[in-house]
Image (cartoon, rainbow, N blue to C red):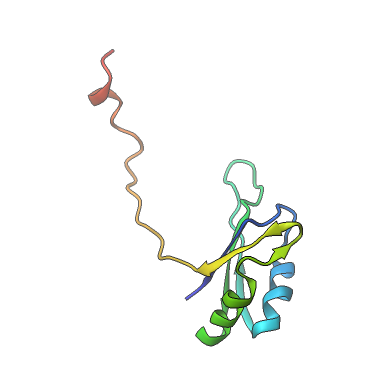
Length: 97
């Protein structure tokens, strides 16, 4: 399982999150998605910890906490939804040309 961390400042780095979450147990992974086109961080991250108990403690303590002048959104991450790789083929069907 992993933890979703939202409403992050764009200057936050992996090591910052590791430091904050390590107060609640061992951090095993931090993943910060970036925009494909710009390479800029997207303002959220995923943190994995060694045990579910450590994750629960971090969520309880950090959800709603103010950090770097922002209120953190911290909760259990949801499973990623499958996306169709269709590519928007509805143009001809919905629009006459």
